Length: 156
Image (tube, rainbow, N blue to C red; front, side, top):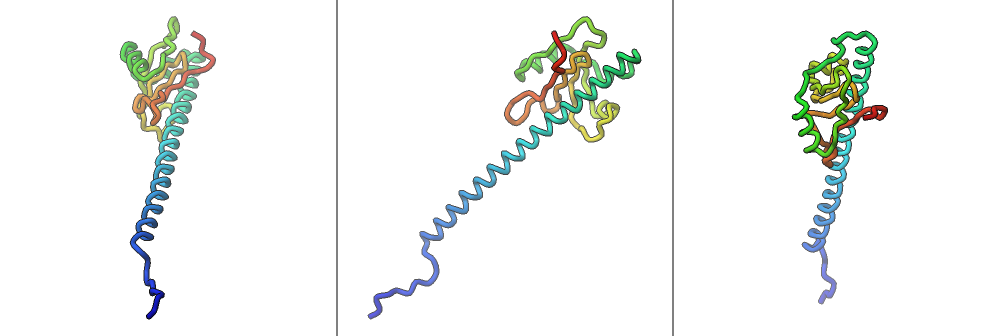
């Protein structure tokens, strides 16, 4: 009588354990990849808003030096609408007053091309005086933070 059994193959228990370990590794990998993609998108949004801000400030400087109104690009927006949009997304506007062209303007894709930005497809709300720029298409990032900047040098 042979007391040693011949084991061929793997048991159902080992197979289940292997599948469980592989599922856990896959879950961690998917979570990491998703978080990385989300972080990259947020970074892109903030980089673009800062680029637009630089373009807006340059346009305003050109306007101030030449007094040519053509440098003020975009469609004037209702201040009440812009205020409501800002407050509902957790940030306050500067509200510069007493300056020429202290209004808020919406920049479309065509306006972005006039500023020299060929690959920016989002729309933005800007204030030439305060240097404020907010992304109108994506008001907040994936964490709920506003996609908004203003010039540090502007004093209320």
